[in-house]
Length: 235
Image (cartoon, rainbow, N blue to C red; front, side, top):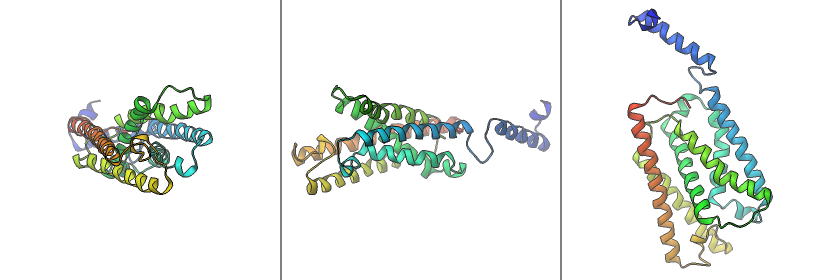
């Protein structure tokens, strides 16, 4: 113990070796994430792919319409990225681009979860399979993915990230308007030009933009706050 507390150069080397040995015993090397983090990512991906499979098998929408829902696009992005992140080199995993991307998906899953559970969920009776699929995508996965974000390395996000995340939703909404003009179908009632006026749809689009921007700013604020005084997380 005296050697570990020593301020000599040899003491520092011994301390580093001890840390490296501890990390190895915990399933973590100096250039990789903890084994527990990888297992969590892969397990969450498996749960999500199961939910997506059930959702695809029970949907009454056409495939083009099904893949036009923002919730589905977000969940597919998470399902594809989780296995990649599980084995991503740690230096790339902890980069600003990587953490911003993962934080963006966290914001999106928060918004889609809130909208579904407090706006779109109308208390209808769903068949068991559909119930499992919807609750996996709109309740279980958002809770688990947000919990995962809590343990991500902190201090890398920038204030402008939240505006970029919110700006991307405008591209999605523009795509929905353009596609809807050709096929006569819109993924959500609050932008459905068959049911509401263009002004109302534009106002709703701005509200969605602001909601994502606000949630994004909250996440950035948390990230920057904890990044100032907490040690970088290992997840």
